[in-house]
Length: 387
Image (cartoon, rainbow, N blue to C red; front, side, top):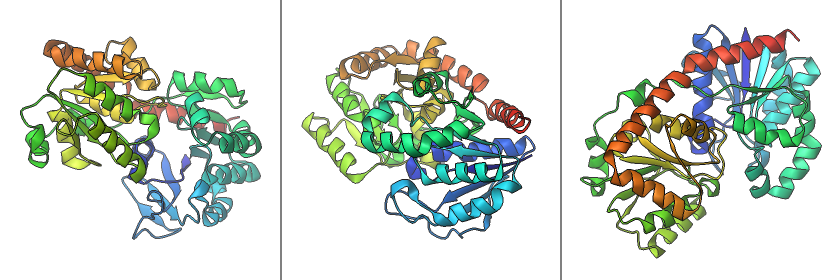
């Protein structure tokens, strides 16, 4: 079976989706599918990936990627991508489109309808109530009514990564069949962590102190400002590590707020972490926290769970809501006071942290493996082909 995945960007600057799609492609290739990915050369706002060829296959671990030039920031317009899709979608048995409110989604949907190729859309959480109300509300409303909803209604299926995401999107009355298949990853790197000393060599101010780790993008929906306010309420001498990047204006606002709260000596702004330093941050941390208003899954949370960390997250994070039912994550409201109580409770009781971390690691291994995800996706593709 040949599967084409279409996504507007694979830049690490966009966080989880750029990590999830390669993991998905590798898992499907390991399951025997022939997998290609079509995307743009976007590398964040105002940037493009350097040294990537256009419209020719670039070999990755078991799959190929075709890059096309983005011609605008808005919707990541790429007419070369549209032309390639019209010429080539008929070469595939199924097309899996990732995100909504993007030119790539429209281009893939239109091309598949024209050439009668079944396609599936994974909305990436952008259809959530919070996202539709708080992100360019009027633009999204108009786009959804005129452009996106007609494409989504023609899809063979809508791929949600949690029941929470599916149930939230049900209010939109979409006709395509909803399918829930959780994301899965090869988590071996997180199961065998490097020593915490690697992180402490880079950030010595965290050494010999309890450490709360936030590792994710810096974006308003992540609710980091409330996390800073919660940390200011703690009686603990713990240090808070903020590991992530985002738009310069928002990062500057968060750093200014940290200073206003008197947290200059207690917050470490680590920036974007990757590789061995990122893995060592998990080893150094006492608690991981993801306080987002809305997440259709929560990849960084899954990594922290796999590492055996005690985790605090919020009701809008789909993975957290599911893991809390298994006693694997502490669930909090998004306001500073309940966040502070949840963090203080774990920082004060190391034995509880150990029990919670062990349960989190077990759940991550058993439920969110790459093999399980690939099996679910393959079955969904076969069902779409036989209709």
